Amino acid sequence: MILSIVVPCFNEEEIIRNFYDTTKSIVEKIGDISSYEFIFVDDGSNDETFNIISSISKNDKRVKCVSFSRNFGKESAILAGLKASKGDLVVLIDADLQHPPSLLPRMTHLIVNDGYDSVMAVRSSRVGENAIRSFFSKSFYKCINRISDTKIEQNSTDFRMMRREFVDSVLELGEYNRFTKGIFSWVGYKTHTIEYDNIERKAGKTKWNIRSLFKYSFDGIISFSTFPLAVSSLCGFIAFSISIVMLVIFLLKSLIWGDPVRGFPTLVCIILFIGGIQLLCIGILGSYISKIYLEVKNRPKYIIKSKVNMDGSIKNNKNDISKFNIDNLSDKKNK
Image 1 (spheres, one colour):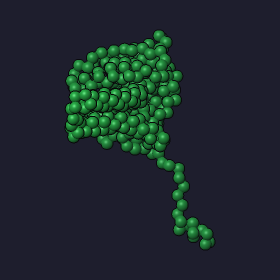
Image 2 (cartoon, helix red, strand yellow):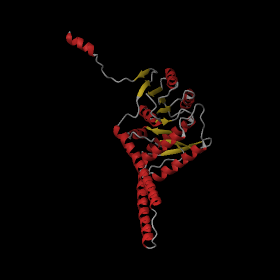
Image 3 (spheres, helix red, strand yellow):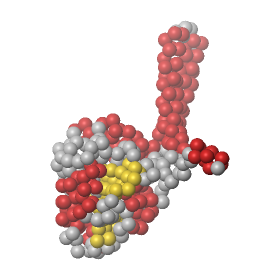
């Protein structure tokens, strides 16, 4: 068995060497693994992350790295790492050591000996995490599992070991707007779940804030549920029903009791109500259309600037485009 260790990185200069040493010492003790490779994906870091990985690769030819031209996001880094992997087993793990490498032997045993196609790790608790972040995270999992046919495990992470067949199935999904946790669940296969206690960062700072987590959650809901579209239709139906009821009430009050309808307050309330419903529905529809727009443009999900190969050398990707010097071409014609 060959193990590919895929590691998305973004500004991890303080922890990356510690992660490599810790993980390497654990992997080398796994009896079912005959060989392994590290695939670091530098997601446009602006610190010394790429240089540190390059220096490590000079002493260990099993270390590979691809570096993006800019920050494309973790989803793109995961995709690039999975595409670059060659192993029979592939494990996706963060570089900040919040995903404990000590679980790798157990994961390997479950796949090799117990016949599972993938093993995913979930946090048994969120102790030590910001209370607001923890609340929104729990709310997200409850929400998406109610409105989507694709079920995502509560407190699930990207920490997962997979067979090659599982990885190939994931790579067949070529969508631009990727939500990896949902994709892992969608492809199916026989999956086992193991729990671990929440671990705080050893060094560096988290790259996720409330705003980025909210955007990530919203993208996940849009990618794996059409429920928001149903909500917009429901809002339109409710608004229509309320308008009919109000019309009947005002008509009866005017015909039976002779009560004049106050025009200005009623008109303002109706305009605000209907306008708000319309803007809500347009916003929901616009979110789906924006995803379609990005898919149709078919832009690359990432651009690789540099690669560190197995021999530790650094190669820059350059487009193979021939360039002509007009002056030289004219001189040749004259000659």
